[in-house]
Image (cartoon, rainbow, N blue to C red; front, top):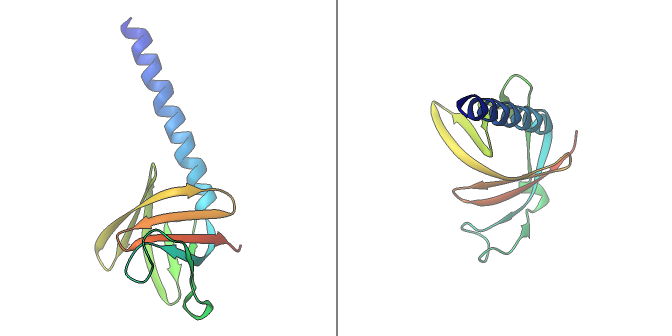
Length: 118
């Protein structure tokens, strides 16, 4: 019985690491923030397009960095959590969806919708 439980725990651990590695490879690339919901400037949970002049790009690199214009931040993925280190402070965001083309991140200021551009 103990041996079975141990084997089951090892299998779950391995599968969670495979899923996390897959998310890590999916997030690498350039993402354009094109819409948002919630927060200060939107009504409730209505999804609103971000005006083109305010859209921004986050580039996630393989070595755990986010390039955002002239800024560089470090990031880590932990399950569905995106941990971003900005100026020595770590911010935690929830990844609600991550596919080859879509990234949706729930932040403290609302939800941001990204489209993969590279």
